[in-house]
Image 1 (tube, rainbow, N blue to C red):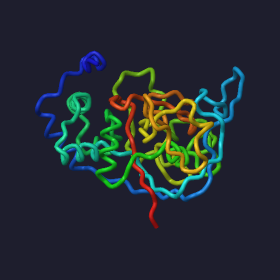
Image 2 (image 1 turned 60 degrees about the horizontal axis):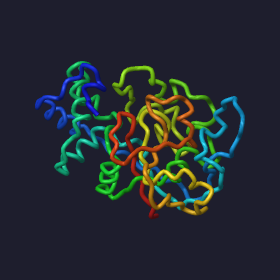
Image 3 (image 1 turned 180 degrees about the vertical axis):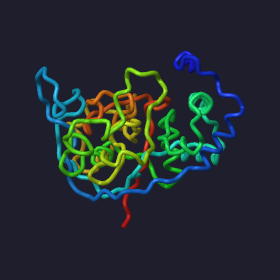
Image 4 (image 1 turned 180 degrees about the horizontal axis):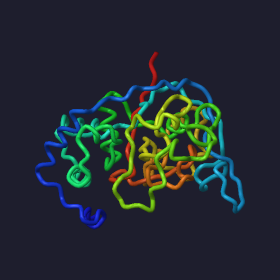
Amino acid sequence: MDVRSAWGSMEPAPPAVEAHLEGIASFAKSSLMITVSEGWFLMGTNREEGTRHTFEKNYDNTEFPKRRIWLDAFQIDQYEVSLGELLQFLQRDDQRVSSELRNLIWHLISIHYIPDQALAPWPALYVTWTEAQAFCLHQGKRLPSEAEWEKSARGTTGEIFPWGDQDPSDELAVFGAYHVHEIPLVANVDSFTEGKSEWGIYHLSGNIAEWTNDWLGSDYYPIMPERNPPGPKMGRYKSVRGGSWKSLPVMLRTATRGGAFPEKRSANIGFRCAKSFSP
């Protein structure tokens, strides 16, 4: 994809951007991890036919049936991985920052005058599945399974949204900018307290969609094991959950599923890390 055509008048970043990449990385702050206790939760949605849209109804045919699934205890990042953390990791691992991210950062700094310190707590974006997994492994973590992600968002009672059954609003999540230009309209990873889940986890709906470890299996739910489902063994797309700053409200449902090629870089996709819990 030609970044200039996608971003209109945005120019390729000059060498001066390097100092800002280092500056943003210098303000990186790690996320706390939240322990999600072992036990059953409701995953998926029962099929419901009809033309009238409701948030209780399945979004597509990949999310049914609703099942009781058992997960062992695990830990998951309270916040999405931040832009500062991602840049810090790429620099430490001597990896080049993608042209998409470099150009975006330069645009935000040179056109919108956003300082390095203000960009550091943005969610990481333009990150591939492989880069996200490498980041998590470097910290002794991993990407969450799709079941772990869904339990983190739905809690123990099968909530429609992380905060409950209330329809999405501007006080609860960042979403709905699908009619605006392509510049991400995101919020700091530690913002929107009212939208956190039962476990106290932030931005599981909206802001930035999140990679999970699993391949996206369109027919996996009926056959997955009821305890600690690992996801399909292979696939074409990796599962992406939660919706983003661009999403329609239906994509913010805790049961709505999406996917992307593992090598895809998108202004809509970031990630958070998880790990198995050892008391």
